[in-house]
Image (cartoon, rainbow, N blue to C red; front, top):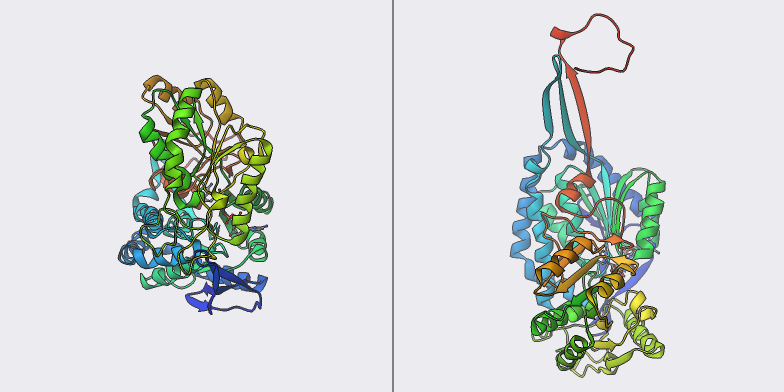
Length: 500
Ligand code: NAD
């Protein structure tokens, strides 16, 4: 059985901890690998390596740093499939989906190669007599990334390309459920010429995380995961004086107006609700058809499509949806369907009945696509994030009712409206209190040169990820005012200096 270890100071190392955790292939249900769970000393080693690499790395010309990332980007392009296969074997998502994930991460690497422009400062001459002023962006030091299981390559790539290109050193703590992608990334960064210690990976669980977020040498923490943990990371990290951006969970609503192209909306919902088995923070988990007639027509179109979903392992290229990540998660998702049923929702398509009969995959963590109709706001299947292939239909009678529903929810990551009415679309774009909005686009994930982040309980902290928000998060500004001797005043001045 292979063992997944840490990557510290340019080397794969086992560290000192004896704790291990199984890593499953969700399609077969077998634990093919184990991952080492770091102890505090291992974390200290990784942070030390990053701290020691920082003085030289931060002073390395930005163009040189960008060129290393450019090489890394080329390696990623060449080995897209290799990384996608590793992701699929531990996460369960289809190969196409994993390639999509890596490509979206790669786009942030492309963005980061523009660092010479992104890092440019500002200069103002003659702000006073013989006085000039300039602002520069400097790196912070050791930055940490703590990431979820559902995007083991893309989410780390929301963080480290911008962090390291701006001159920081980085310690990544990936999810213990699919840890292998992080090691490939570390090795490929080294191959691209990244100096040892600039990028490190520490495998582990709460013990590693708690050490990282309270370590005195860590300056900034980027987190993506569930809301309770995001909140914990934010409160603990900021209390220790660190800069923190912590992205949390989601419940994304898609409003379908009576004038929408219903076939387009149905197909969009299929991909957005069931793609990646619903294990996406931008998955649509609530459909909000406006008027009963739209709701009936929508459900009628969805049912056969859900029943026909091709559910299978990533090794079968015809699969449209893979298994869930672990047996525990499968149980949790099924539990939400049980709860919805007992609270009065109609289980129109029941994924709990699904049996995988492909040989070798009978014990995989598969569940079928599920459709719950007549879901109400007080039900747990509506209020809580299920993170599985379960779509709830909440019927509303007007645009305003749909908007009020969205505003009543704790989460505000993404949302979409399907309509052909420009007025309605424009009102929605302006008024909806959600961070990422789609108009006839079901999963409006911003491109790398814009920034990713929700509102309300979907984010803790002031900065979204990548784009200029990422540059702002990973740099601090320094403003210097200079005066040259020609105009030096001779007498001391005790009033607040003004430069007019
Ligand atoms: P998770 O919160 O369980 O784990 C995320 C990270 O936190 C992992 O690295 C894990 O090891 C660590 N962790 C878990 N429990 C911890 C604890 N008690 N103390 C300290 N660290 C802990 O999330 P997950 O199940 O891996 O991922 C799914 C969640 O991530 C969903 O809620 C999903 O919405 C969210 N997510 C959000 C976004 C976004 O951009 N908002 C993107 C992807 C995923």
